[in-house]
Image (tube, rainbow, N blue to C red; front, side, top):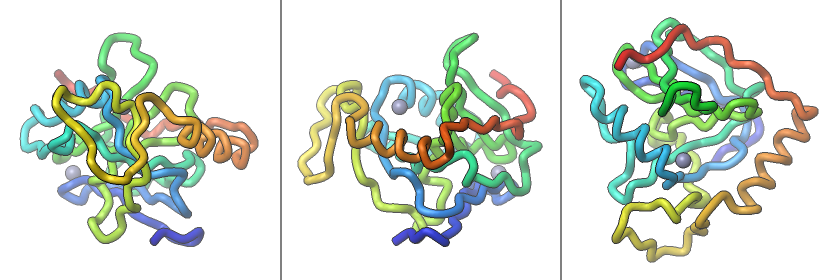
Length: 182
Ligand SMILES: [Zn+2]
Ligand SMILES: [Zn+2]
């Protein structure tokens, strides 16, 4: 399991692009919101792409403080994608192999890194499901994992506590070199 001194590397599928996540992530969660599903559908249609969503429609993420995400090699391949013109949130894809790398909320102090980018042995266990009210019709969850219709208090609290620890700063991410071609 992750510890405070750990470093896990998020790597695109071809290995040209890397982000290092330092320390214990804020939370590991799977999102079922319609935006994540829509974006996943887009990314799954890119050339050479692999599934982004799980079979139940969820997209797994690991959330980490921006000041604990270090951009390594391959930033020249990063392109942003927004669901609509002027949408505040962006998802960033490594175009060397069309691997989605992370989701950034405008003004947010964290990055939601696509959990599939981590090596299987280094992926923190999923702690919760969020936004399950948007899950595909017919999907039911029959396990003990906490599942929340929206963003739970527990989820928001973890984010808030991380922000407080950062002195309520939201560092800028300026490693993304352009916009994903349609
Ligand atoms: Zn790549
Ligand atoms: Zn989502």
